Amino acid sequence: MTLSTYAVGIGLRQPHYRQVVQAERDSLQPVSFVEVHSENFFGCGGAALKVLEQVRQQNELSLHGVGLGLGNAVALDTGHLQAIKNLVQRYKPALVSEHVCWNATAEATFNDLLPLPYTQESLLHLCAHIDQTQDFLQCRILIENASAYLQFADDEYDEFTFIAEAVKRTGCGILLDVNNLYVNAKNLGTSLSSALGTLTSLPGGTIGEIHLAGHLNTGEGLLIDDHGSRVSEPVWQLYQQTLAMVGPAPTLIEWDTQIPALEVLLQEAVTAHGFLEPSHA
Image (cartoon, rainbow, N blue to C red; front, side, top):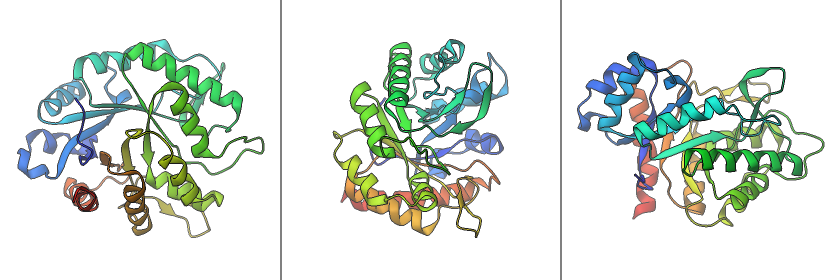
């Protein structure tokens, strides 16, 4: 199944399971798909999988991974890949995505999305793991730009030239996190316009999904990508600019900390839908 480029979705989190399962279809408008973190459903049974089964019967699904570590310098965990494949085969998601990050060494695994140095060596590791993942899953994946709070002295690419090169070499798509784009630009002093300019040079259909989320302003010149509040006005403005430059794409509201009432997520979805609709005119 392919989502409409004008589709709007919300991240499905445990506090909202019951409401989403029991909701009448009209009560979730304009939501037309839900996204879950793949790792939350790796078990062989239980309440979570029962919920996912019910939700999938009513909505299109996006699987969003947070633990594979495509940028790792060590081998991918084949058990992790198999667990994702089990979900893909069972639930037939419209989208499957992972992050441009690393999370493991030979000695340890970290529960975080750690930024990559944008070097030729990192690019080779990333592309090899994207190829392995797509071959194993037998589907195209999207790769998401992660939030970062530092730059590496040895960087050979800017962030989106690096990501674009990975897309060209592997045939994967991009999950463009507009909040991360904004947070990184403000924290690192990089250019929003040059990043979007890089994306416009890619083939049509490269951006398979857009994420929108809130961030924390520490008041000390640092923005934290915490997914714990409404989308900020500057990020809405950047979203509008993004749509104007690269066209519409399925858009998801993410909210992972200080999770509000479902109605608040639906209000954010309505706002996103309002930005998408003019681009459809």
